[in-house]
Image (cartoon, rainbow, N blue to C red; front, side, top):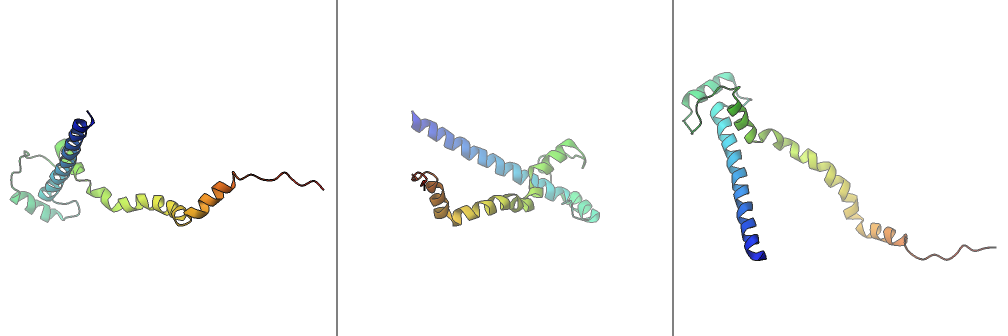
Amino acid sequence: MGKPLQGVRTVYAALLALALLWAQSLGYTHAVVHGLPHAGPTAVQAQQAEAPNLGWPDHDAGDAQCRLLDQLSHADSVPGVPWVFLPVVLSATPLLLQQGLAVARWAALFQARAPPSVP
């Protein structure tokens, strides 16, 4: 009973990965057709005039469909990803470097001790 479910999960995982890649490529294609935000206004107009029809109807720059397609590319968050994970990696580094010392200190807490000596 476990084998067929594992195959179905693998298929669904592959389809999900394919859908994510397709959505991102659709967003990038939309950004190229409309011109990237940092491009000049003349370059944007020239690209819009020569843009092929890729299946979506003509829409304005402030249109809901245009905003959705712009958000599908996730390009704005790519430069910030290393800065998000940097504190996590840096906080775990001392533990990884001194793993034996941390285990020894933890084990020392549970060692038996003699009663205090009374003079």
